[in-house]
Structures are given as C-alpha cells and as structure tokens.
Length: 190
Image (tube, rainbow, N blue to C red; front, side, top):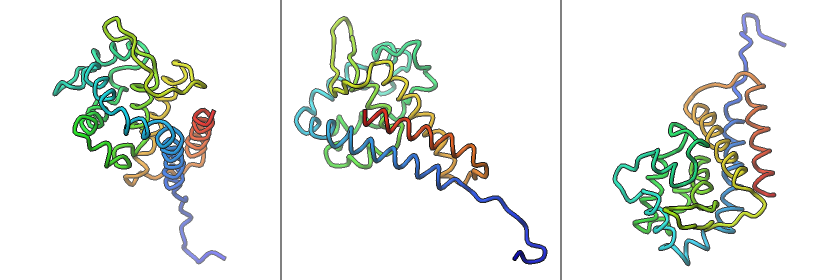
C-alpha cells in the first residue's frame, strides 16, 4: 500500500553498471594477470621496460600519433580514444619497479587492461624489428585484441559516471553494459 502523496521514483541502476565492470576487471586480473602477466613480470621485467621504452614511453610527453604508429594502431584507434595518460602512468611503475609490489593498484580498471592488451599481447614491428607478443593469447587474433581493447575503454567510459553519482534509471542502458561485459568475459575465457 502506498502512502498518500508518495512519489514513485525510478530506481538507480548505477550499482549494477559498477558491478558488471568490476566482474570483468576481476576476470581479466585472474585470467590475464595472474596466469600470464604477473609471473612473466617477475622473471622478465627488463624486457617489459625495454618495450615501453621502444614505444616511446621513456619520453616525458610521448606523442599519441607516434605511439599509435609504433604499436601498429594508426587508423585502428584514434589518438583521442587511446589511453595515453593511463599508459604513461602504468609505464612509470614498470620503470621504477613498483609494478612488482603495487600490481592491484596499477591494474585496476578496464582501461589499464586495454593498455596491457594493446602493448603486450600483440606482435609489433618497431623500426623494422618484430617484437613480441610478450603475452600469448592464441585464441585471440590481433583484430579481436584491438576490438576488445576498444570495448574495454568504452565500458570504462560508461562505468566512470556511475561511480561518480550519475544515475542510470533506465534498465536498457544497464542491459547494454551487462551484455557487453558478458561478451568480453566469454572472449577472455576463450
């Protein structure tokens, strides 16, 4: 029974958006991070540092167009979409060794995993020399890795407003995030 004068307010579904993205983040941590990336970092940190440097992240202000060119992403990802700032932050932790202690702070968020996929799971050609992939995901082609990275970044963009007080009153917007997260989980798990 409704009280007289009660207002029927829509229910905010933003927590669901956050949970779907967090679930995807945790799957990436478990299946990409713990199984592939973290053990290899422990053994071969210098190789990761070298690759970051060769891509241009040794510079104080790497130029997005040059980074995209070296990553073989020119024309596949726009400079505006590429998470240059996040990549630069992550790179710093590889260079100073904090990556070995602060893994869970550094690999927190879908954008961080997109950077890892774009930089370390693809075969690159840098100045005529083939490099990598440092992390092998044989069930994913280069095109799928790029598409998956774009989708991770788009989901991060949908998640951030939900974490900062934007409401999601419409079930349809949550269904989009849910189906996208489930599709990406299935891709990761192969």
